Length: 226
Image (cartoon, rainbow, N blue to C red; front, side, top):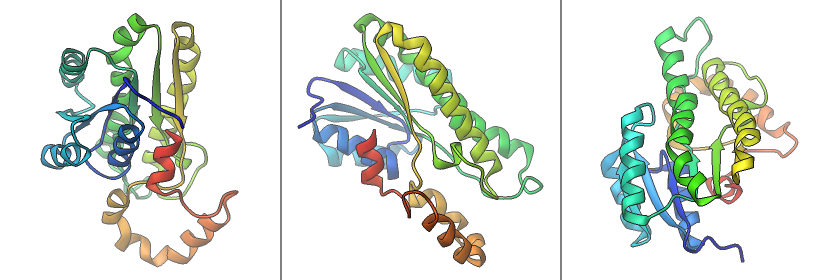
């Protein structure tokens, strides 16, 4: 069985949904897990539910000083960082006309700049260890276009491209970089948009069933891919 004993993993956006499931999955195979999020109460609860092998750090992925603090705290407590999962993300659904510039920039800041800042923050530790693994959570929307998600798609195409480039750059230091491009994700992320999506439900179902692998991935499937 695949094990991550004695490894330390830091997961962003881990208070709920995909991030929380990734943290639980990594802990189940032996990793010590640091859950990070801006949702402090939910994050602390998620870490407590995992047990002694988990801890929580508040982290806004768009703030470099937050990354410095979280990484230094992790290194001080656990001595190393072997895995970084850049999962934190926000969603906006709407036409280009109904996507204000500040909303577009916000998605790029969280979904694309956040992983860039996180990658920079862990590089020194991983290079000193001579190995590491960085996983970017992209999306099927980072592979193909789809109506009403131009801002989200741009951010996820960006993080997938960043993963490809950094994989080439960091591989010589023993650091692997991969992206997971799942069809599906956190139901709590899409829930606020459900009312707007209901008139197009039939088209959405048809779109999902027309994929090479029909339907959407479960949280557990995404976590297992990580």
